Amino acid sequence: MKIAVYGASGHVGRFVVAELARRGIDTVVVGRNAQRLTDFGVAVRVAAADDHSALLTAFTGVDVVISTLPDYTGTGEGVLRAAVAAGASYVDVAGEQLFARKVFDEYGPLAEAAGVTLVTAVTEAGVFGDLLADLGARRLGGADEIVLSHVVAPGGEGSRGSMRTVLRNLDAFTSGGLSWSDGEFRTGPKPRRDTLILPGATDPVAVVKFPQPAVVTIPRHTTAASVEGVLAKEIFAMVGTVTEADLERAPETPSAPAPYSMVVDIHRDGKTLRGIGSGPDTYRNSAQLAVAVATRIGARAKPGAQSPAELFDPVEFLDALGEFGMTWSLG
Image 1 (cartoon, rainbow, N blue to C red):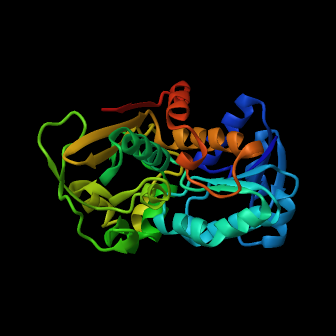
Image 2 (tube, helix red, strand yellow):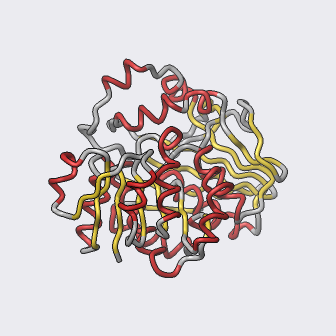
Image 3 (cartoon, rainbow, N blue to C red):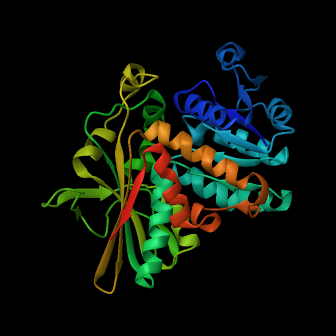
């Protein structure tokens, strides 16, 4: 198997290359700046994210492309389009709802025709959200409502790439993004539930609607009247005030890991199951997830755009994440 990593010199990209090296997988690093790619000790191919011809050359002959861009809304489609054209499957670590929906709606049919597989939003939020929702709904015999919330543990530090994602998608974030209701995607700022009890707490906190990426994937495999993402109001208040100056001050490489928990509440006939997926570092874990998915889809996955739950057995996949310090529970 040969895997190309686009954006390899970035924070998540370096973790991806390191994980591929640990597994002994033939790797090609791709980016617009050759000098930033020379220290990996693997094949280098130079291509800007908007140079289709160069990207097509870079991806020809690889089995899977892993895209680790910091901003998919602005630059993600070029890499995705070239991967499909080159006959390579594709994995990304996008956190943007609208980009994820575009992968399914616009590029899924193209990928199916090309015989390749696309898996978007392969982050701790996207993967834990999708798999825990699927597993919980099956255990309850269905779902009336699924609520997703990402909780950042104290002491972590965000990257400049994350800050850029927030800034470029500020309108979508502050408007609440997409939710799923009665068989279709809807927009609007108000959540169905305006409070949430966070893990380890006894008192509820105020929450606002937030565009969690798994909202896009869960309805593909799980029937639920409502699927929406929320975020603690005090955290959202900080997200909504991000500026270009904040972006310039943010570190390209965080000085400390960013631990997290992804909380998934599945409601059915008055009963609730809570799924929690946790890990020691958002960035490293997203890279490890991307490699885990890429190596699994390389040879045998169903073509087209697919969600994690459409490709993998949830329990088997979640249990396998233990080697990365990632844990999960459902109860």
